[in-house]
Length: 251
Image 1 (cartoon, rainbow, N blue to C red):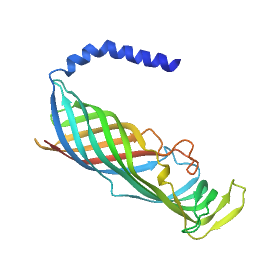
Image 2 (tube, rainbow, N blue to C red):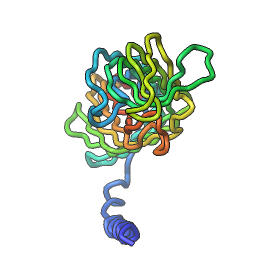
Image 3 (cartoon, rainbow, N blue to C red):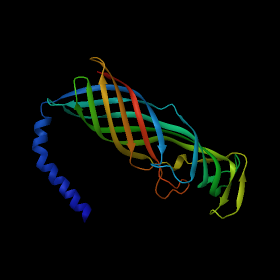
C-alpha cells in the first residue's frame, strides 16, 4: 500500500510540474559526441567483510569505455543526455581471509567440489563487458564546464569471476566441519552465476578543451549486486563501482 501511495504521489508531482519542464525544454538542439575512456575501480562489497583480514594487492584490468553520446540542449543551462556505451570493467585482488565460505575445485580436471569455510590466501580476477545506456541531466556551470547526474542500465554480454585459494585449509560444511588442507591452488569459477543486468547511479563532469575536444570524468555506482540473492558461494553482496576518465569528440 505504501508503494502504491508513493507511485501515485510521484506521478501527481510529475503532472503538476510538466508544464514548467515543457517550457524549459522547448526550442532545444542536439549535440552528438564520440567518447573514449578508461574505467578504473572495483567490483566490491560496500564495506570490508569480517572474513577479509588483509588486502595484499589490487590491480586493474584493461577496461576501456567506447561509445556515442547525444545531449539535447535547451536555451537555458540545462540539458538531457543519453547514448550507448561499450563498457569493460574489472580488477584483480589478492587477500588473506578467515572462514570465508566458498566452493572450490581441489585439482585441475577434478569433478569434486569442496564447499565450506576457507582460511588462507585468496586471489580473485573479475572481467566484465557491458552494453550500457545512460540517462542523465546536464548543467552548464560555465562556458567550459558541464556537470551531469543520472542513472544507467547495463547488459552483461561477457563476464568472468574466477580465481584460486591456497596456503590454508577449508572446513567442510560449517566452521567446525572436517578440515581439509589446501597446499596447492584450489580454483573457483563463478562466470555463469553473474547477473545479466546491472543498474546504478552516474555522476560526472566534462571540461571543454576546444570546439571539438573535451575531457570527462564519471563515477558509476552500481546499485544491484553482481550475483543473485540465492547464490551462496560468495556470501556478501558485491557491486560495480568504477570511475571513468577519457576524451570526447563533438561530431
